[in-house]
Length: 472
Image: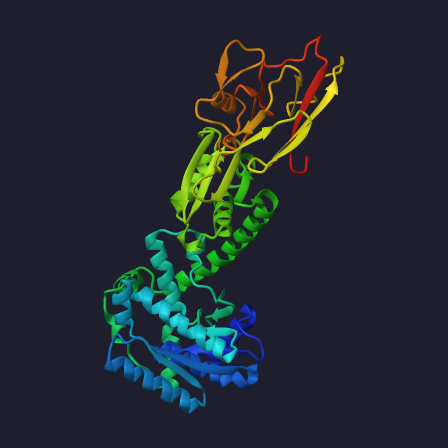
């Protein structure tokens, strides 16, 4: 590939991927190797035609003493020769790693990107250009295959992604390293040789130096094949992501503490989309996309199955919990699903009480008894006002609570009634129980009425109690 072909290919990708716009300032990360040197030179050659302002940025990580200091000087001189401003920094990475205990590669990346973002802010730049090329992409895809990955992982690195309000762009992502090395030789560009690239301390180096050469015995065009795989995966991943976002919009209810999804709605989706939707919910709640374990997602998906336990919960990590409550799937944050206990007294028959913990209002009215004195539904109960012992108490459930149920002999555990009525576990501690002055439970709104103070033919005044939620 000659120089003009290389320039044309890079510009074509930039147009197709909208990597920059006329008038943009671009910070170019330059290590001194052939990929980043070629990138800086190529962008310099087209900057006038494209209306760009180019600024070089170099980080000396302090790992290799004189060698890395020499690289920094080489980059500075090259930028000066091109007439491009150059920003550089020395970072004592060995000291930082010793202080924090971080992985060397992770520490280097953190500090390098911090510097690049700082320089972008200084110059008002909206783009940071990185020198990753097709061979880097092939290595990335292969490493992810070895670790075990899905469609998103096979997509590899993207041409552009947003980070801290700046676009990280990779204009060379479809250009092979050999083409970039040939370009540097043809242009007489001075490049540096990072000796750490030959050390087998890092997985990427072992993949590059040991595994890729072996695999090329089976497929000489291995890099092109892996890059093509990443292209296909990226497009299909993008489509799947859009389908997941649409499913999220249609099916997921966003609540104050998380998200809720009907079990049947999830099962109505293709298995692949089920997984995507669960991951999207977790990401919506703050989980990093790269840290969403497959096993966790699969456990949540399988919990929705018809033959799975009707109530079930799991810690998804990152402070996120998942619960199946009969036909509802809930994703929420926090240590507990329930608040502390509550207790409210009602001293008079005609009153109104809002129970904030349950989001329920109790309305009490007194009326004359008549043949039409009946509750309108399960959210209402009627009592003989003269036989009901005040003050009434509205409280949440206590361990061992039992109720003398209308129509049954003896008492029944409140817990068993909640199970029979399929009350979600997260609601059981919130549900109000109405007890009389003697402590006997007389009504559980929406569940059962007790046998106390029944309305009979001799009842003169009826106490009608209605329970309703916000908006009902």
